[in-house]
Length: 393
Image (tube, rainbow, N blue to C red):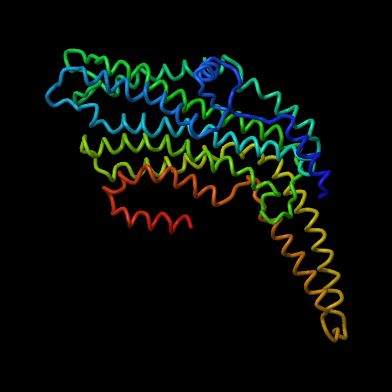
């Protein structure tokens, strides 16, 4: 490809960079006013943004819990590792993932709009542009906040039964402490909102891929067995940060049940398997947008290549099987048949969902690593790690 053509592609692709991060809305404007614009990627700014969330989700409840009078037998704030993992690990990972995932998504959408991959670059940009309101509209953020708040009553019921903790005081009717009230109505909704916002963004990305797929030109004989579009799996690979954040909190809950409630560690093995499967399904969910049109391209490619291979094979056999038999078989004849069979095999094994095994392994590792403390109650850590790497590599 010439430098001029490549420059034209870059210019065309750069006209409409798609982003999963909104440019407006209450939360974005608030963070921008505070100097924590999530669309900017400097490490110092991202660190300051995470620190501001830590003040709200960890320091504030810790201070409120410390001024409460000590109660004999109650689980203290410092001993509640579920709270620590939510505020110190899960929420920072969900925030850190924004710049990582968005950078990959921008690259992918720009690449999809390249004239050598797309039949109508302007049409693709128009389709992508039409989906921006699903990210930008204020009602989207308001709806996600409402859903996050709807979780609060369920969370309160679940965390005010059983052993007394820093969150509530036992009595005729369990009563939330000041720290528990902050935890229930601020910290938990913040975490749930961030998680729901990621799931919504992932749904929008699937729609972007689905709307774009019909304009793409997959090369069914491409060596990556993804029609030349294996690069789109880079987004699920970066989504592993979100998976790690969610998995860390789920694992913390299991660890609390095993250590404090006496639940057998073996009882969580089936839920763990379910979480691993769900993690892969969620991470690669947007790629389903390509499946229908890539399946059509694969069927068409198989039909055409089957005819080519069959015709060439008949010509070769007609030449080889004639009597008297040919004195020798030329290397050109044998190699051309071998090459055609190899190309047909590539077309036959083309994946209608363009993923890479390496990205699947990254997502699985992101889900498994937070589970290691729980798994250590079932088998030695070194034995678990050997089994995991043997399965993934």
